[in-house]
Image (cartoon, rainbow, N blue to C red; front, side, top):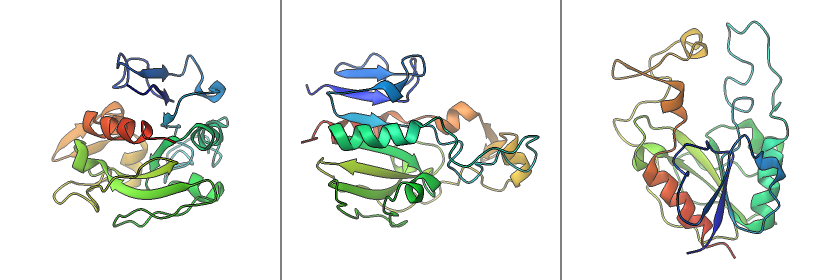
Length: 202
């Protein structure tokens, strides 16, 4: 079994305890990862997403891209050791670091000069309760054919909610509130997909 490193993940999350997976949580500080294994990287997205400023009710406006260098370090790791980087759809980090913008309805684009390919995929196809559109950047790995486009009947994370409610974390799904942890969670089938891609790194 090919060893991989899971970067920027929870120590008690879906990657914990898996054979052949070296978990780098907040305590270990994934910015310090220096190989040698391919990676699956989930760098923090709060300061890169649609609500990077903290939302309309935020008492203190945040700075775009202020993530302590996490995305830059994740990008270095995936280009140096191969693997896959995952970030929310419409992430400002892609434009900031000169990455290609994936096609919303799916398909792989690339490669770039590092051998990187990009795509947009819905985690709703892989077990998430919302459609959760996601961008992937994959370097020197086999890229599989995925289920493209948003999953029918799967709502957006902010479905039917105002920006003010989103800022308070009140995301609902069919009348039921999803917690912040549920929204951020990586479904097991999606986790397994990312690991399988990273293990093909050349």
